[in-house]
Length: 154
Image (cartoon, rainbow, N blue to C red; front, side):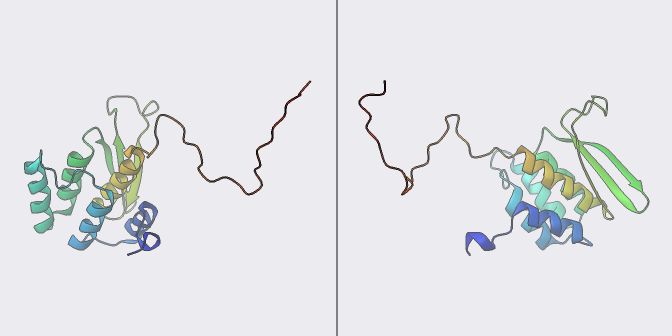
């Protein structure tokens, strides 16, 4: 499979918005594309719990357990059902007032998909960029570049 044909997190976000229900295959796609700790050797109990919840079709519990395994610093701040949609807000600082907190909010008609949408966005934000502390220099030299020697500037 080429790099260009692999789904990206934006594709996953669109798939989450367009989905009507969670399936085991869809959960497997979400896990394979976003999760770095699954399966976790150090937390085999949490991994086994997520797998068991997926096998039993407990999608909401599986989404919450996946959030706990992958992003333990994020917590559900608010779950609200309003006008036919579930609204889920995730936060790192749940005890702060709403106006001070930088939370991630997602909504969907299905509760599990609302939580998974917020989870995918939090995972995207929390993923460290592949940057070093020292800036990199481009290796390719332009064909227009020519070194110039100047002996007398004054």
